[in-house]
Length: 551
Image (cartoon, rainbow, N blue to C red; front, side, top):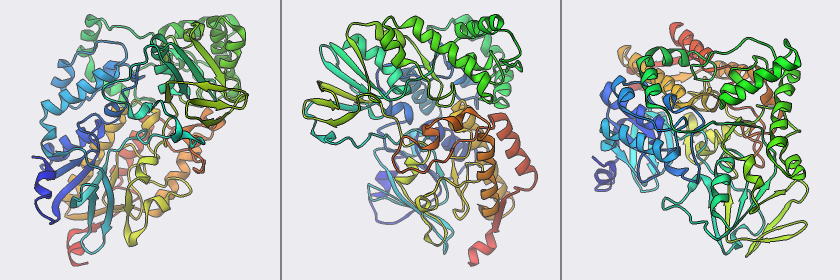
């Protein structure tokens, strides 16, 4: 049933057990658990025209996940795990979207979803102890539980370049790519930004465009993906051991079933260290970090050995020494920003139709009618691609008018940085559950692993409330403060604190510099959550149903 058709026939408020915002990995699984497992009356509200979340919007050329395909999927249903066949080592956007559509079809998850609709407001009513939710379509819902599955990287960020709207050619942000695609053949193209979406799209665009100019602010460390078709026999062997593989991943640092070495980069001589790096380099992907040395994330001297190894690879790959030096990162440690997994990125700069523009030495002054003007020259383009990233972690929350007790605005509460308990709940906002919110492992781990852990915890909590005759659950302010302090303490010894990255909101002007994800690892986080539940939901307080009804 489409919720919109029912609601728009009347101005009445629709009473529900739960409203879920978003229909990506989080929304799909939350819908399945709350609706099908618990039997709750649920509506899922999604801005897109169909399911997919991140993979619905991010359709830019070369878009793919940097988690290996056999791990970038749901684990809640064994038959689902066995029946789906991935074609490549890393899942590409069209295949991920097909997978999520398959999941939606298989479990009939669209039945209670409303598409083409954005939630504009969600206010907690202390008289009814319910959330009042409104949409841009004029729909009104009242629900006991509000669950956000709005993604960590779903609020596109384009710098406010002077003249940005004056450009008369085509312009696109990688995070909201046209579903019909973009034809670059014979065109002069600019790509601004060399983060993950830029790194993935630049080689593909370069192969199609007449000429491509890349406007780079920050040179990046990259590890080769070694992407290619996956051998079906290898995947069949993995499937035989899926239970053990996923159990290992659930208790790992990054949500992957990799064996993590305890070897220090400073414990071996130069020759052995080089050989270890070379082997890990050939393995590719995140294995470069996990398989090489244990202290690359925490020791600057050890980290520098990996950084210099990658710099040498860049210099070996890029034929023009001057261009190579522009591409070599020297102002931040390896892994302090998101580790990028590339395919032929540096090789792209050996093409005659690719030009690198270093905007540190030649800054962008304005966008003009015909292209981009820097301090030193005017460039004319047919297409400008903004690969400029996202207002990460909090941006999507700030687009919704979310208010808790006494009308407190979430945006205002987070003005100096996000405050959460476990990245899941917020003091003063009862029965609000954020799937992979700020303060949880989220973007520092394999997302499906993190999402399933969060949704399972939310589901178990709702069962606890129901079984115990409880109406509300709410984080204690003291527990929230202690968790935020813990998140920062865990991040301090890591490389993350040695760079201005979107992990700290540094890509958004005026955004407070606060480290937002939990860097302690998926396994440690899971254990902490289990301890909290075992200790009678330590750090939370409850309101009994009878008290709520009489309040």
